[in-house]
Length: 226
Image (cartoon, rainbow, N blue to C red; front, side):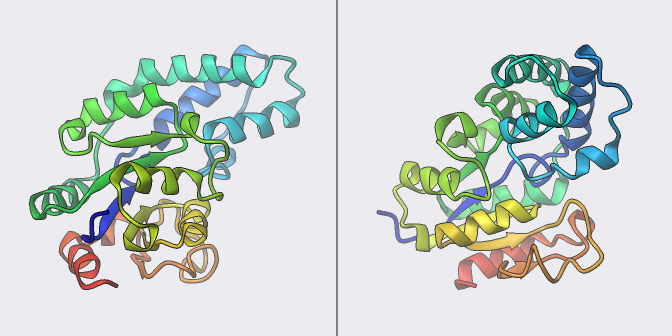
């Protein structure tokens, strides 16, 4: 196993700003089944939760008769129609490039589908820098369970204790803790006290989210062992 710290990135809201696209895909999906008025505020409750778990909750909430599998297909189709507009957070690209140049093992671990991950990485040019990824489709349980992060560590042949997770949401930070991995948190949605739960277990917290994220500071933290 590699002794150099590996860095495992969440995708949506961490590397790329896809949350508006997922919101629109979800809104269109619900509208197809007669549910109108789905708001950004409601969507924001599911940031950091896998697509399957999100749709299971919404299906029950609105009494949708379609199966979760059908809803997944419909939402994924809507998302892929929008995904060409995916944008990367510039400071995150800098961070990934710095890590890659230094030889750190890198991976993506996401609650999205494999096709959604591939599309987002290709649209932003990250596919060349981050060829290793794990999807929620590859594991049994979504975040806050640690499955996707542990699977990524196995693919990279790095012990979980030598991995750093980069996350934007509470469920992912908790999943990193359960996986025994250090964590850099860059909140997508700043709460009233982002330095408390759900980010309390993060070793490095950029309280102001992406506008505050500093690639150099994050790199030095990873390299120094936290």
